[in-house]
Image 1 (cartoon, helix red, strand yellow):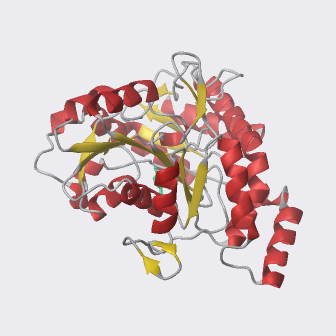
Image 2: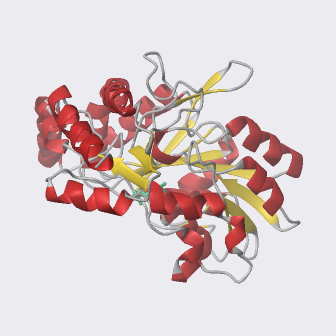
Length: 379
Ligand SMILES: *Cc1c(COP(=O)(O)O)cnc(C)c1O
């Protein structure tokens, strides 16, 4: 699904040199690379504060702790996402409220958000799934109207641009009150272990969060709030510093692969190719709204599982993201959910399949994958 070794070859000297110098200085925790990466990412994203932390799940949890959400507060998020998003809501004893998604973008449906708002609702967590932003025009308007926080789960869309309806642009993760990301190795900006970060333009919130990640300390050995221990290792920060200057080029390689996939699948009546928010169908050459963390097809003739088995036999990697709606997971089941509230998610879990997507795909590999898919689907 990913080729991290191929990508490493392009940045090997810089990565090896900086890791060696960390080994020689033993600055494993809070070393200079952490501060430098933080500043580099702030300027790349155009955001005032980046707070590095240990992983993307912690980032979400810490963002919610920073906003001082209290047990019983309702937090609305998508039914169709990775479990981490809902896990931290439940862990903090907030009440997760799962809602359905849009069938074309796979992202949270603003109409479903509005329908789920109650007097207890305190926050919305849009997940920018598979590499493009949720409908932030609508989501920010809903949040403003109902006085809710917006926490962007940007683990899959770092580097994506969002064009608002008035034509202005912002980077994914910088539009809400706070944004979070993951540097898990297979993410678009991945390190060589675990890592994560929180972004915000709010000075007071950034200050609060910097204390939370460090045991609730604002002054050494004075613990003002209950915090956690969540740090980005210096070695991981050094890897990320080497990779960040290449992020836009990495995103473009992914888009190029997506264009080749979508062009090959264009005439296929049983396959739905990913739609981009600005409607270029993922094949427009100037697209910058989608960074294709995943390239996800919908198989509409009931043959998804058979296709998956066929790809497996042919030695072509694939992923089913995600096979079970969160509202049907044992840990997150709730008697308030009704099946008719999730028609899209219930359908998507049966139809989606993600193909290999990374920065090192070449034309030959893509031709082999698309030919295998097309031949099978029309058998
Ligand atoms: C990967 C991911 C996370 C969690 O990131 P970790 O660094 O693995 O903890 C959270 N949300 C989404 C949508 C993700 O894809």
